[in-house]
Amino acid sequence: MAERTGGKKKVLFLCSHNAARSQMAEGYLRARYGDRYEAFSAGARAFRLSSHAVRVMAEMGIDISGHRSKDLTEFFGQEMDLVVTVCDRAAKVCPAFPWTKKTLHMGFTDPASFTGTEDEIMAGFRSVRDEIARWIDRTFGDPAADP
Image (cartoon, rainbow, N blue to C red; front, side):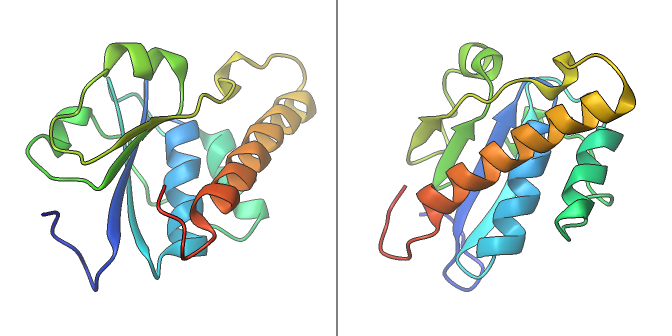
């Protein structure tokens, strides 16, 4: 059984680099539903936290500036209730996490792929952030739901 903090379910968001999507998902789940879920994030390979992700999350009042990019190996042996791959590459690279009760895949566009002016890049990051937030609200928002 997963160790719980106050009965919270443990959720690990995985992405290829743990730079943006998984970091935004971790921050959002913790901020919105931290009373029921303990959120974590990691990457198949740690990179660095995206400053754009930090900025777009701050726009909605969520501070992820203290996050750091983590390699998946930091979570080896730690039981999770749910592992969510948030990019198609992570779903292929990390197809199995043996310490989870359930795995779910929900791919989001890689915001690092956006090009153009700073305003255009930020608009792309906002779009991905909002898509992640909507999905988390639908998936984790109902206390009776069991993602």
